[in-house]
Length: 351
Image: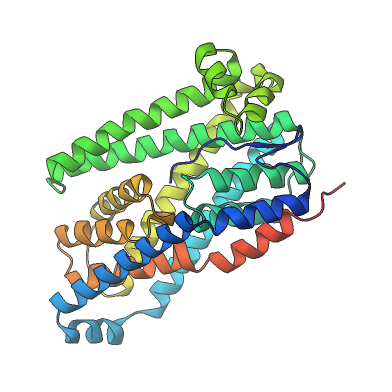
């Protein structure tokens, strides 16, 4: 999930332009561009092909056995754990809003989490859609432009740091256990450097550094309003260590909750695998999801997860079933609530 800075609406709302009706029409046109549909089709075909191959390689009786031995209590726990990820992301927005001097209710924070997740998964724009929705919604909820810009930068920077830490731990455990091929570990390690660089740039831009990069980004029409809003950010707020640590911890908790959800899904199917092995598999699948071009890594995440879980000793049928259960909880189930929340948050501005 690569998340980048968003545009700004007119001179006030990041990530949007024009009046609300025009914006909705523009968003609809962007959502239904041929390349967006093509990305969805590629992802769906890839996912279907994976299921077809696995089900034909594994015996049908293995899937029937899994269906009979499934443990509803464990799956209920997996669903509960996954729901907590929306809470942790909501708390990220609440913490950054509080630091910017704005009170964001717990309910609005959770709605914001679901809305940004929906936008990220529905439109393959490298995370830009989610940030755009979040920044627009925060402005409509009464947050200042400078506050929204600061919140977005902190969210992106701390997410990248949490991502880099989790990836580092996964690689270290993989090297110790000889779990993943060396070329995958090396590629993942290279991506850690990219994430660290992203975090550094996000925190350096509003501090007045990287002037040459700032000038180049300001020339990009869609980024120009966002770059101008950097001048309004209070540089002292960038040194709010307590807030940065809180946001970092919340993003870290989200990664751990996702991993635990996948692990519990395996247990619910009667499988036995260590949490460390699942963590390696999840981070490898997340990496391939991140670098993919399809929405939400549809197809690429599933393939990487199944292959890595199989390499950890799980039967192929169980690896596929656990992965599909996890994706059902994390990708498909939140889509409708996310759509509803995005429509409500992007309605009329509040007082």
